Image (cartoon, rainbow, N blue to C red; front, side, top):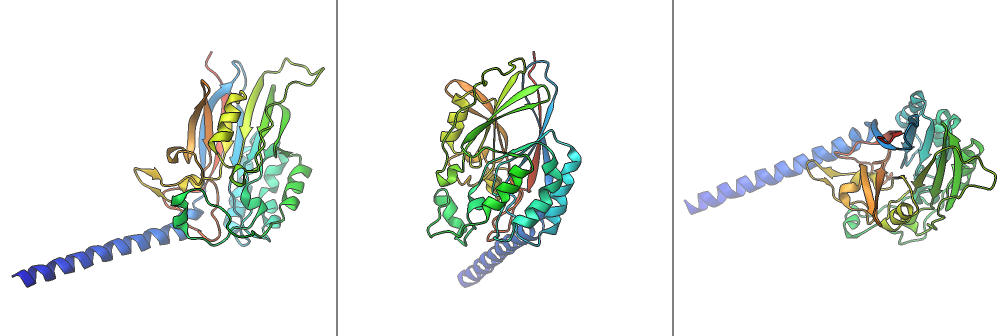
Amino acid sequence: MADSSLASAARTSAWLAGGVAGAGAAALAYGSLIERNLFGLREETVRVLPAGSSPLRVLHLSDIHFVPGQERKVRWLQSLAELEPDLVVNTGDNLSHPYAVPPVLEALKPLMRFQGVFVPGSNDYYAPVLKNPFTYFTGPSKHKHTPRELPWNLLFTAFRDAGWQDLTNTTALMELGGLRLNFSGVDDPHLSRDEYPGFDDLPAGTDSSAPEVRIGVAHAPYQRVLNQFTDGGAEIILAGHTHGGQVRIPGYGALVSNCDLPTWQARGLTSWAHGGRRIPLNVSAGIGTSRFAPVRFACRPEAVLLTLAARDS
């Protein structure tokens, strides 16, 4: 009887192990073949504008991580122009391959006729490298070897030539929809290239009748940067980088954020509090993945359409 019980237990354990392995393989296949191409649009309304202001539609793009041959991604990005946004905000990591600049520009060309701003991400500057995905559980990813530089200057020159404003460690003012948008942006905090520039004061002689809205823009939402924006009077912060965790556990959420942002804030519209102020924080789950980890699970790729609306009076 003892031998029979042991044999039965062994068969049950083998069956369970096989079931777990099979489920894992199925999830991996789903995430790599299906979900990473299930592009979607998340829509949010954020009441941050002065009372009486007309709504402002902001399309937030992040982490495209383009690899040549991703034609479905090209068509989907092009289709976003049908939303007719008032403003496009690109929070970096457009590239994932040395030859990605021409197809990325083809994909974004319809959107580049709208006003826009952008900041760089690490995978605009440097190509991704093959790494053990489990290292993300030990802290934010780091380059251990000299990375291969990507043609980021060609990409950013094209953005600027189209009229998009470069917020790399600088500020910009924009008149839009009867508002004065005051942007503060930083270079990628993940590479420790951020130098917070503050927000602009009104230039002498400027008509000050337009209500001001302060917007912080960064690629990676490290806490030091979020605190600086908040202390500087930002009314909203936009960031990317986290991929929403990329692989999420249903009912639990992200396991990692690849920075010091709490994992529960790795995707979506939440708020950030510092120095007695609390402001909206939108972190995009991103559109792509590293070409060495082309999988998403319970974390669809997304663009975000933010409707900035007037505060309740």
